Length: 215
Picture (cartoon, rainbow, N blue to C red):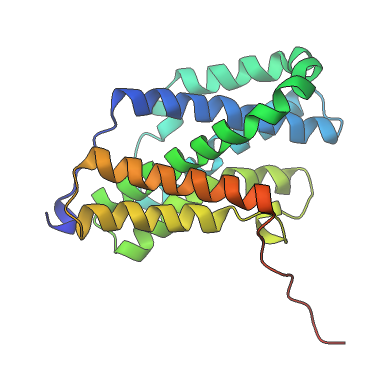
């Protein structure tokens, strides 16, 4: 299979995971906005940025239309509903917070793999395809932090995030282009790599050290 000939077909069960990823990303946006004491408009803006920021950047870079959240018109409606229900969600967040890591890792993984696949479909180089996959999977959180006037957690010492996405995207690409695996197996391999790597990074606090000027 030639690199430029690849055509990505999103499978039904992956569509469901993507939808879950949008929901989980929006909830993280709600938590971020709540820490800043924002009103419902602010909550919606932050949740929207976290859920759709990375995918929007990918689509703009690839000149893909319509943007993925416009093509799936129910996505922004769901994010608005989450923002309007944020008061109720925050009452239960203490109970659900321990369970958010896994779906968040799954969401990041799926967004990363779909971003990589769309870039491959557009005929980009392997490195650019992987880079756009990482942007899709992680830059929603970056935009959310920026809106909240915080240094993005992606850029400071914290459990590995973008590195997990970068590694899994290469596994996905390698299984397709070098290994000749079927699409399902390549997606599974990339998904398992990203999720396992991310969960391990959080559990054992794997992070890069800060780089500082010598004193």
